[in-house]
Image 1 (spheres, rainbow, N blue to C red):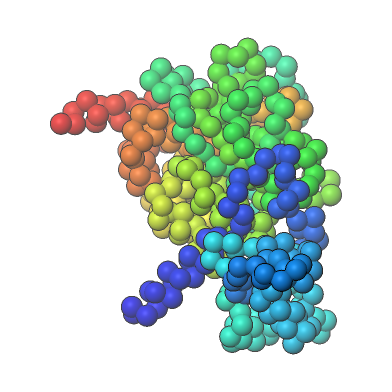
Image 2 (image 1 turned 180 degrees about the vertical axis):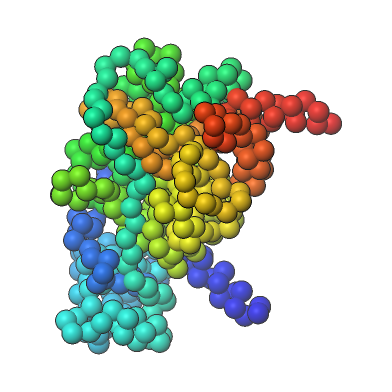
Length: 431
Protein backbone atom coordinates (compact mmCIF):
# COMPACT_ATOMS: atom_id res chain seq x y z
CA UNK A 1 0.00 0.00 0.00
CA UNK A 2 2.78 2.46 0.92
CA UNK A 3 4.67 1.62 -2.26
CA UNK A 4 1.59 2.38 -4.42
CA UNK A 5 0.99 5.64 -2.57
CA UNK A 6 4.50 6.91 -3.22
CA UNK A 7 4.18 6.02 -6.90
CA UNK A 8 0.92 8.02 -7.14
CA UNK A 9 2.49 11.03 -5.41
CA UNK A 10 5.42 10.93 -7.80
CA UNK A 11 3.19 10.73 -10.86
CA UNK A 12 1.03 13.63 -9.63
CA UNK A 13 4.16 15.72 -9.11
CA UNK A 14 5.44 14.94 -12.59
CA UNK A 15 2.18 15.72 -14.31
CA UNK A 16 1.55 18.93 -12.40
CA UNK A 17 4.28 20.62 -14.39
CA UNK A 18 2.86 19.65 -17.81
CA UNK A 19 2.69 23.27 -18.89
CA UNK A 20 4.74 26.45 -18.91
CA UNK A 21 5.34 27.93 -15.48
CA UNK A 22 5.46 31.50 -16.79
CA UNK A 23 2.13 33.38 -17.18
CA UNK A 24 1.43 34.32 -20.78
CA UNK A 25 0.34 37.68 -22.03
CA UNK A 26 -1.35 38.34 -25.37
CA UNK A 27 1.91 39.72 -26.73
CA UNK A 28 3.87 36.52 -26.17
CA UNK A 29 1.18 33.90 -26.76
CA UNK A 30 3.16 32.51 -29.70
CA UNK A 31 5.81 31.18 -27.35
CA UNK A 32 3.70 28.37 -25.93
CA UNK A 33 0.88 27.79 -28.39
CA UNK A 34 0.30 24.79 -30.61
CA UNK A 35 -0.75 25.59 -34.19
CA UNK A 36 -1.41 21.88 -34.68
CA UNK A 37 -3.91 21.49 -31.83
CA UNK A 38 -6.91 21.54 -34.17
CA UNK A 39 -5.35 18.71 -36.19
CA UNK A 40 -5.28 16.34 -33.23
CA UNK A 41 -7.63 13.36 -33.40
CA UNK A 42 -9.03 12.03 -30.12
CA UNK A 43 -10.03 8.80 -31.84
CA UNK A 44 -6.47 8.21 -33.00
CA UNK A 45 -3.77 10.02 -31.00
CA UNK A 46 -2.08 9.28 -27.69
CA UNK A 47 -0.43 11.40 -24.98
CA UNK A 48 3.01 10.27 -23.82
CA UNK A 49 5.62 11.62 -21.39
CA UNK A 50 9.36 10.89 -21.29
CA UNK A 51 12.15 11.97 -18.95
CA UNK A 52 13.59 15.38 -19.82
CA UNK A 53 16.56 16.26 -17.56
CA UNK A 54 18.03 19.59 -18.64
CA UNK A 55 21.69 19.37 -17.67
CA UNK A 56 24.02 22.40 -17.43
CA UNK A 57 25.30 23.45 -20.85
CA UNK A 58 28.64 22.14 -22.01
CA UNK A 59 31.64 24.48 -22.11
CA UNK A 60 32.63 23.77 -25.71
CA UNK A 61 31.75 26.23 -28.43
CA UNK A 62 28.19 26.09 -29.71
CA UNK A 63 26.86 24.01 -26.82
CA UNK A 64 23.36 24.75 -25.50
CA UNK A 65 20.64 23.28 -23.33
CA UNK A 66 18.97 21.97 -26.46
CA UNK A 67 22.12 20.44 -27.83
CA UNK A 68 21.43 19.52 -31.43
CA UNK A 69 17.71 19.00 -30.84
CA UNK A 70 15.32 20.01 -33.63
CA UNK A 71 13.98 23.50 -32.94
CA UNK A 72 10.40 22.26 -32.76
CA UNK A 73 11.23 20.46 -29.48
CA UNK A 74 10.96 23.67 -27.46
CA UNK A 75 12.27 22.98 -23.93
CA UNK A 76 13.40 19.42 -24.69
CA UNK A 77 16.87 18.32 -23.62
CA UNK A 78 19.05 15.97 -25.62
CA UNK A 79 17.99 12.95 -23.58
CA UNK A 80 14.30 13.60 -24.22
CA UNK A 81 14.94 14.20 -27.92
CA UNK A 82 16.93 10.98 -28.18
CA UNK A 83 14.33 8.97 -26.27
CA UNK A 84 11.51 10.32 -28.41
CA UNK A 85 13.44 9.62 -31.59
CA UNK A 86 14.06 6.03 -30.48
CA UNK A 87 10.42 5.51 -29.48
CA UNK A 88 9.14 6.94 -32.74
CA UNK A 89 11.47 4.70 -34.70
CA UNK A 90 10.65 1.60 -32.64
CA UNK A 91 6.88 2.04 -32.87
CA UNK A 92 6.50 3.98 -36.12
CA UNK A 93 4.98 7.01 -34.36
CA UNK A 94 4.47 10.50 -35.76
CA UNK A 95 4.73 13.44 -33.37
CA UNK A 96 1.86 15.94 -33.59
CA UNK A 97 3.08 18.37 -30.91
CA UNK A 98 4.99 18.46 -27.64
CA UNK A 99 5.23 20.32 -24.34
CA UNK A 100 7.99 20.59 -21.71
CA UNK A 101 7.54 19.77 -18.03
CA UNK A 102 10.35 22.00 -16.84
CA UNK A 103 9.98 21.69 -13.07
CA UNK A 104 10.33 17.90 -12.97
CA UNK A 105 12.30 17.17 -16.15
CA UNK A 106 9.59 15.54 -18.26
CA UNK A 107 8.44 16.22 -21.81
CA UNK A 108 4.88 15.50 -22.99
CA UNK A 109 3.97 14.76 -26.59
CA UNK A 110 0.91 13.94 -28.64
CA UNK A 111 1.67 11.09 -31.03
CA UNK A 112 -0.12 9.52 -33.98
CA UNK A 113 -0.01 5.69 -34.15
CA UNK A 114 1.29 4.10 -37.36
CA UNK A 115 -1.16 2.78 -39.97
CA UNK A 116 -2.48 -0.69 -39.24
CA UNK A 117 -1.84 -0.54 -35.47
CA UNK A 118 -4.79 -0.06 -33.13
CA UNK A 119 -4.44 2.53 -30.40
CA UNK A 120 -5.25 0.01 -27.63
CA UNK A 121 -2.49 -2.31 -28.82
CA UNK A 122 -0.02 0.56 -28.95
CA UNK A 123 -0.99 1.83 -25.49
CA UNK A 124 -0.46 -1.60 -23.95
CA UNK A 125 2.97 -1.92 -25.54
CA UNK A 126 4.12 1.57 -24.55
CA UNK A 127 2.87 1.12 -20.98
CA UNK A 128 5.41 -1.70 -20.61
CA UNK A 129 8.27 0.32 -22.12
CA UNK A 130 10.71 1.50 -19.42
CA UNK A 131 11.48 4.66 -21.39
CA UNK A 132 7.88 5.90 -21.01
CA UNK A 133 6.81 7.85 -17.93
CA UNK A 134 3.11 7.98 -18.82
CA UNK A 135 0.94 7.04 -21.78
CA UNK A 136 -2.81 7.39 -22.33
CA UNK A 137 -5.38 8.15 -25.03
CA UNK A 138 -5.94 11.73 -26.13
CA UNK A 139 -9.54 12.49 -25.17
CA UNK A 140 -12.09 15.11 -26.19
CA UNK A 141 -14.04 17.48 -23.94
CA UNK A 142 -16.77 20.02 -24.64
CA UNK A 143 -18.30 23.09 -23.05
CA UNK A 144 -21.83 22.86 -21.64
CA UNK A 145 -23.88 25.58 -23.26
CA UNK A 146 -26.71 25.81 -25.73
CA UNK A 147 -27.60 29.03 -27.52
CA UNK A 148 -31.25 30.02 -27.09
CA UNK A 149 -33.24 30.51 -30.26
CA UNK A 150 -34.75 33.78 -31.48
CA UNK A 151 -32.62 36.10 -29.36
CA UNK A 152 -30.95 39.34 -30.39
CA UNK A 153 -28.16 41.62 -29.25
CA UNK A 154 -28.74 44.46 -26.81
CA UNK A 155 -27.05 47.86 -26.63
CA UNK A 156 -28.12 49.23 -23.23
CA UNK A 157 -28.12 48.14 -19.57
CA UNK A 158 -30.31 45.13 -18.81
CA UNK A 159 -29.58 44.17 -15.24
CA UNK A 160 -33.30 43.53 -14.65
CA UNK A 161 -33.24 40.98 -17.46
CA UNK A 162 -30.46 39.01 -15.80
CA UNK A 163 -32.45 36.06 -14.59
CA UNK A 164 -29.64 34.56 -12.53
CA UNK A 165 -28.63 37.86 -10.97
CA UNK A 166 -32.21 38.64 -9.94
CA UNK A 167 -33.21 35.17 -8.75
CA UNK A 168 -30.14 34.75 -6.54
CA UNK A 169 -30.62 38.20 -4.95
CA UNK A 170 -27.10 39.15 -5.99
CA UNK A 171 -27.76 42.88 -5.65
CA UNK A 172 -28.46 42.39 -1.93
CA UNK A 173 -25.33 40.28 -1.49
CA UNK A 174 -23.24 42.96 -3.17
CA UNK A 175 -24.09 45.42 -0.41
CA UNK A 176 -21.58 43.43 1.65
CA UNK A 177 -19.21 41.89 -0.91
CA UNK A 178 -18.37 42.27 -4.58
CA UNK A 179 -15.62 39.68 -4.65
CA UNK A 180 -12.90 42.30 -4.23
CA UNK A 181 -9.53 40.92 -5.32
CA UNK A 182 -10.56 37.25 -5.42
CA UNK A 183 -8.60 35.54 -8.21
CA UNK A 184 -10.60 33.23 -10.48
CA UNK A 185 -9.10 31.04 -13.21
CA UNK A 186 -11.43 30.36 -16.14
CA UNK A 187 -10.40 27.32 -18.20
CA UNK A 188 -12.51 27.58 -21.33
CA UNK A 189 -12.36 29.16 -24.79
CA UNK A 190 -10.94 32.63 -25.32
CA UNK A 191 -12.65 35.81 -24.10
CA UNK A 192 -13.35 39.15 -25.78
CA UNK A 193 -10.63 41.26 -24.19
CA UNK A 194 -12.06 44.43 -25.72
CA UNK A 195 -15.56 44.12 -24.22
CA UNK A 196 -16.32 47.25 -22.20
CA UNK A 197 -18.08 45.25 -19.48
CA UNK A 198 -14.92 43.18 -18.89
CA UNK A 199 -12.39 46.02 -18.84
CA UNK A 200 -10.19 45.83 -15.77
CA UNK A 201 -11.52 42.42 -14.79
CA UNK A 202 -9.08 40.24 -16.76
CA UNK A 203 -5.55 40.21 -15.33
CA UNK A 204 -3.90 37.84 -17.78
CA UNK A 205 -4.63 35.47 -20.64
CA UNK A 206 -3.06 32.18 -21.71
CA UNK A 207 -3.71 30.74 -25.17
CA UNK A 208 -2.92 27.01 -25.06
CA UNK A 209 -4.46 26.35 -28.48
CA UNK A 210 -2.99 28.59 -31.20
CA UNK A 211 -1.60 32.01 -32.09
CA UNK A 212 -4.90 33.43 -33.31
CA UNK A 213 -5.57 36.57 -31.23
CA UNK A 214 -8.60 37.44 -33.36
CA UNK A 215 -10.22 34.06 -32.68
CA UNK A 216 -9.43 34.45 -28.98
CA UNK A 217 -11.41 37.71 -28.85
CA UNK A 218 -14.27 36.26 -30.90
CA UNK A 219 -14.80 33.15 -28.77
CA UNK A 220 -18.31 33.22 -27.32
CA UNK A 221 -18.42 30.61 -24.55
CA UNK A 222 -15.54 31.98 -22.49
CA UNK A 223 -16.88 35.52 -22.98
CA UNK A 224 -20.28 34.39 -21.66
CA UNK A 225 -18.78 32.70 -18.60
CA UNK A 226 -16.57 35.70 -17.81
CA UNK A 227 -19.55 38.07 -18.02
CA UNK A 228 -21.71 36.04 -15.65
CA UNK A 229 -18.89 35.87 -13.13
CA UNK A 230 -17.42 39.35 -13.19
CA UNK A 231 -18.96 41.88 -15.59
CA UNK A 232 -18.38 45.39 -14.24
CA UNK A 233 -20.97 47.12 -12.06
CA UNK A 234 -22.07 50.76 -12.19
CA UNK A 235 -20.29 51.46 -15.49
CA UNK A 236 -23.39 52.25 -17.57
CA UNK A 237 -22.70 49.16 -19.65
CA UNK A 238 -24.97 46.17 -20.13
CA UNK A 239 -25.00 43.79 -17.19
CA UNK A 240 -23.56 43.19 -13.71
CA UNK A 241 -21.47 40.16 -12.82
CA UNK A 242 -22.04 38.07 -9.73
CA UNK A 243 -18.63 39.23 -8.40
CA UNK A 244 -17.93 42.47 -10.28
CA UNK A 245 -14.65 43.18 -8.50
CA UNK A 246 -13.10 39.74 -8.83
CA UNK A 247 -9.97 39.30 -10.96
CA UNK A 248 -9.96 36.80 -13.83
CA UNK A 249 -7.24 34.76 -15.50
CA UNK A 250 -8.32 33.20 -18.79
CA UNK A 251 -6.85 29.93 -20.06
CA UNK A 252 -7.96 29.08 -23.58
CA UNK A 253 -7.92 25.29 -23.81
CA UNK A 254 -11.01 24.91 -26.02
CA UNK A 255 -11.60 26.02 -29.58
CA UNK A 256 -14.44 26.16 -32.10
CA UNK A 257 -14.47 23.81 -35.05
CA UNK A 258 -14.97 25.34 -38.53
CA UNK A 259 -18.44 23.85 -38.78
CA UNK A 260 -21.69 25.86 -38.56
CA UNK A 261 -23.29 25.74 -35.08
CA UNK A 262 -20.54 23.45 -33.74
CA UNK A 263 -19.73 23.81 -30.06
CA UNK A 264 -16.29 24.36 -28.61
CA UNK A 265 -14.06 21.35 -28.00
CA UNK A 266 -10.95 20.71 -25.92
CA UNK A 267 -8.71 17.69 -25.43
CA UNK A 268 -6.54 16.00 -22.81
CA UNK A 269 -3.44 17.84 -23.93
CA UNK A 270 -4.77 21.41 -23.98
CA UNK A 271 -6.64 20.97 -20.70
CA UNK A 272 -3.55 19.48 -19.05
CA UNK A 273 -1.50 22.50 -20.06
CA UNK A 274 -4.15 24.84 -18.68
CA UNK A 275 -4.53 23.06 -15.34
CA UNK A 276 -0.78 22.79 -14.86
CA UNK A 277 -0.42 26.51 -15.58
CA UNK A 278 -3.06 27.28 -12.93
CA UNK A 279 -0.98 25.31 -10.42
CA UNK A 280 1.68 28.02 -10.65
CA UNK A 281 -0.75 30.82 -9.70
CA UNK A 282 -2.58 32.03 -6.60
CA UNK A 283 -6.05 31.54 -8.13
CA UNK A 284 -8.42 30.33 -5.40
CA UNK A 285 -11.34 29.49 -7.71
CA UNK A 286 -11.11 27.42 -10.89
CA UNK A 287 -14.18 27.50 -13.15
CA UNK A 288 -14.55 24.47 -15.43
CA UNK A 289 -17.75 24.90 -17.45
CA UNK A 290 -16.88 21.85 -19.54
CA UNK A 291 -16.48 18.13 -19.27
CA UNK A 292 -15.99 14.73 -20.83
CA UNK A 293 -14.66 11.25 -20.04
CA UNK A 294 -12.51 10.36 -17.05
CA UNK A 295 -8.84 10.94 -17.88
CA UNK A 296 -5.77 9.77 -15.89
CA UNK A 297 -3.63 12.82 -16.72
CA UNK A 298 -6.37 15.35 -16.01
CA UNK A 299 -7.57 13.58 -12.88
CA UNK A 300 -4.08 13.69 -11.38
CA UNK A 301 -3.67 17.37 -12.18
CA UNK A 302 -7.10 18.07 -10.71
CA UNK A 303 -6.19 16.18 -7.54
CA UNK A 304 -3.08 18.35 -7.25
CA UNK A 305 -5.17 21.52 -7.57
CA UNK A 306 -7.60 20.33 -4.92
CA UNK A 307 -4.73 19.45 -2.58
CA UNK A 308 -3.64 23.11 -2.81
CA UNK A 309 -6.93 24.31 -1.31
CA UNK A 310 -8.40 25.51 -4.62
CA UNK A 311 -12.16 25.73 -5.04
CA UNK A 312 -12.88 23.88 -8.29
CA UNK A 313 -16.37 24.47 -9.68
CA UNK A 314 -17.62 22.29 -12.52
CA UNK A 315 -20.71 22.15 -14.71
CA UNK A 316 -22.79 18.99 -14.58
CA UNK A 317 -23.00 17.08 -17.89
CA UNK A 318 -26.30 17.54 -19.75
CA UNK A 319 -27.22 13.87 -19.21
CA UNK A 320 -26.65 14.14 -15.45
CA UNK A 321 -24.03 11.37 -15.39
CA UNK A 322 -21.38 12.27 -12.79
CA UNK A 323 -18.68 9.86 -13.91
CA UNK A 324 -16.11 11.82 -15.91
CA UNK A 325 -13.77 14.78 -15.79
CA UNK A 326 -13.99 17.04 -13.85
CA UNK A 327 -17.28 16.25 -12.14
CA UNK A 328 -16.35 12.89 -10.61
CA UNK A 329 -13.35 14.04 -8.58
CA UNK A 330 -13.91 14.17 -4.80
CA UNK A 331 -13.88 17.77 -3.63
CA UNK A 332 -15.10 19.32 -6.88
CA UNK A 333 -18.27 21.45 -6.52
CA UNK A 334 -20.66 20.26 -9.24
CA UNK A 335 -23.46 22.56 -10.43
CA UNK A 336 -26.51 21.78 -12.51
CA UNK A 337 -29.01 24.03 -14.23
CA UNK A 338 -31.98 24.84 -11.98
CA UNK A 339 -35.12 23.02 -12.97
CA UNK A 340 -33.30 20.25 -14.83
CA UNK A 341 -35.37 17.07 -14.89
CA UNK A 342 -32.46 14.67 -14.42
CA UNK A 343 -32.14 12.99 -11.03
CA UNK A 344 -28.81 13.72 -9.36
CA UNK A 345 -26.90 12.57 -6.31
CA UNK A 346 -27.22 14.52 -3.06
CA UNK A 347 -24.86 17.46 -2.78
CA UNK A 348 -25.17 18.70 -6.36
CA UNK A 349 -25.85 22.45 -6.36
CA UNK A 350 -28.47 24.06 -8.58
CA UNK A 351 -28.10 27.52 -10.11
CA UNK A 352 -29.76 29.53 -12.89
CA UNK A 353 -28.71 28.33 -16.32
CA UNK A 354 -31.68 28.91 -18.62
CA UNK A 355 -31.86 32.02 -20.83
CA UNK A 356 -29.02 33.84 -19.07
CA UNK A 357 -28.22 37.31 -20.41
CA UNK A 358 -24.47 37.80 -20.57
CA UNK A 359 -21.59 39.33 -22.52
CA UNK A 360 -20.91 38.37 -26.13
CA UNK A 361 -17.93 38.95 -28.45
CA UNK A 362 -18.01 42.27 -30.25
CA UNK A 363 -19.17 44.24 -27.24
CA UNK A 364 -22.73 42.88 -27.23
CA UNK A 365 -25.06 40.90 -25.00
CA UNK A 366 -27.26 37.90 -25.65
CA UNK A 367 -29.06 35.03 -23.94
CA UNK A 368 -27.49 31.61 -23.55
CA UNK A 369 -28.36 28.45 -21.63
CA UNK A 370 -26.68 25.45 -20.06
CA UNK A 371 -25.00 24.19 -16.91
CA UNK A 372 -21.94 26.21 -17.97
CA UNK A 373 -23.82 29.35 -16.94
CA UNK A 374 -25.01 27.68 -13.72
CA UNK A 375 -21.41 26.91 -12.76
CA UNK A 376 -20.39 30.49 -13.54
CA UNK A 377 -23.05 31.82 -11.15
CA UNK A 378 -21.66 29.63 -8.37
CA UNK A 379 -18.08 30.71 -9.09
CA UNK A 380 -19.21 34.31 -8.69
CA UNK A 381 -21.00 33.63 -5.41
CA UNK A 382 -17.97 31.71 -4.13
CA UNK A 383 -15.89 34.83 -4.83
CA UNK A 384 -18.31 36.94 -2.75
CA UNK A 385 -17.82 34.54 0.15
CA UNK A 386 -14.03 34.32 -0.18
CA UNK A 387 -13.75 38.09 -0.19
CA UNK A 388 -15.43 38.09 3.24
CA UNK A 389 -13.66 35.00 4.56
CA UNK A 390 -10.48 34.16 2.58
CA UNK A 391 -9.77 31.00 4.59
CA UNK A 392 -12.94 29.19 3.51
CA UNK A 393 -12.22 25.87 1.81
CA UNK A 394 -14.19 24.04 -0.87
CA UNK A 395 -16.19 21.93 1.58
CA UNK A 396 -17.19 24.94 3.67
CA UNK A 397 -18.29 26.88 0.59
CA UNK A 398 -20.23 23.91 -0.80
CA UNK A 399 -22.02 23.25 2.48
CA UNK A 400 -22.82 26.92 2.97
CA UNK A 401 -24.27 27.25 -0.54
CA UNK A 402 -26.27 24.06 -0.13
CA UNK A 403 -27.88 24.90 3.19
CA UNK A 404 -28.57 28.52 2.18
CA UNK A 405 -30.26 27.58 -1.10
CA UNK A 406 -33.80 28.92 -1.51
CA UNK A 407 -36.88 28.20 -3.56
CA UNK A 408 -37.20 30.53 -6.56
CA UNK A 409 -40.00 30.03 -9.10
CA UNK A 410 -40.63 26.62 -7.61
CA UNK A 411 -37.00 25.51 -7.83
CA UNK A 412 -34.42 25.12 -5.07
CA UNK A 413 -31.24 26.93 -6.09
CA UNK A 414 -28.26 28.77 -4.65
CA UNK A 415 -28.92 32.25 -3.30
CA UNK A 416 -26.13 34.81 -3.07
CA UNK A 417 -27.83 36.99 -0.47
CA UNK A 418 -28.72 34.18 1.92
CA UNK A 419 -25.23 32.64 1.59
CA UNK A 420 -23.55 35.96 2.40
CA UNK A 421 -25.99 36.56 5.24
CA UNK A 422 -25.34 33.11 6.70
CA UNK A 423 -21.58 33.66 6.51
CA UNK A 424 -21.79 37.07 8.15
CA UNK A 425 -23.96 35.61 10.90
CA UNK A 426 -21.31 32.97 11.56
CA UNK A 427 -18.60 35.63 11.70
CA UNK A 428 -20.58 37.70 14.21
CA UNK A 429 -21.01 34.75 16.57
CA UNK A 430 -17.43 33.51 16.27
CA UNK A 431 -15.32 34.08 19.40
